[in-house]
Image: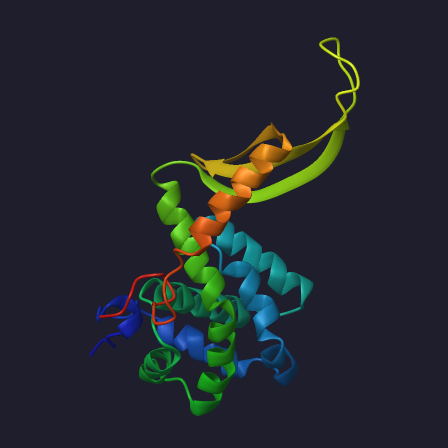
Length: 212
C-alpha cells in the first residue's frame, strides 16, 4: 500500500522517497550534524538535471556516497518544497516523515531545518507566483549625489538620490535606475509607510492568507 502524504495533499509518495529519506540515518554523525549545509543550497527550484549536477558536485567535495547522500538530499528537498507549498505545520511534516519510515531521531533532525527554511521557501513561492504575471522586484541599491551645476543653471546644489531597482521578468534579471529629488524621496517614504500598514495580521498563514 502506497503512503499518502499531507505534503502532497493526500496523494501517494513517489516510489523510493521513504527509502531515500531514511538514508539520512545511514550517514555519519558528522554529516548528519551538518546536513543543513548540504540541504539548504539545494532547496531552490531548478530543473532536475541541474539539481542532479549540483548534488553530485556537493557529494564529491564532501567525499560522500552519491547513491546514499545524494538521494537523501534530494528526498529531503522534495519533501520540504512540497510541505512549504501546502503551508504544512511542523507537526504535520513530522507525520509525513513517520509515515515514510522515519524514526524519532530523523524527525528531530529535520524539523528544526524545516522551521529554519520555511519563511524563505514561502517567499520563493510568492515570488514565483508573482513572476508568472509580470516583473518582480528583488533588490534595491541606492546612493546620494549632489547636483551642483549644469548647462541649464549654476549653483543648483540639490541632493539627488539614485535608486537602482533589480527585478526579475521572464526568467531574466534586469535593473532600472531612477533619480529622485528630495520631494520625491519624501513621497516614496509616505507610500511605503502606507503599504506597511497593510500587512496581514499576526494570525495569517506563512503565505499571507488568513486562516479560516
